[in-house]
Image 1 (cartoon, rainbow, N blue to C red):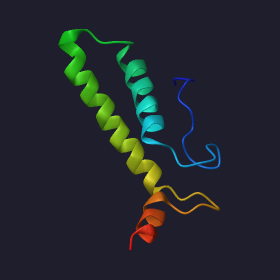
Image 2 (cartoon, one colour):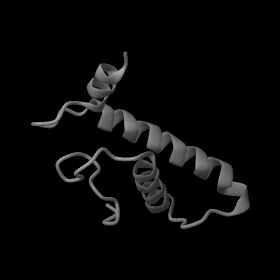
Image 3 (tube, one colour):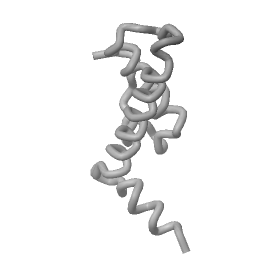
Length: 82
């Protein structure tokens, strides 16, 4: 797998992964799988859609993971709402 994709969950990442972190990982994944660093104009739409889909799946995964000593993101966000 692509070595430049870093682990985005605690405790490896000391804080919650940002949208930028998630997007960067998704972009690296799609680049690796497609073999394109930057797609041609005729592939741009499908490339960008794949990055968005991988980013959504990654955010969902990170939001649902239970890591010892850390509450899942979905739980902590729900508790913060009034």
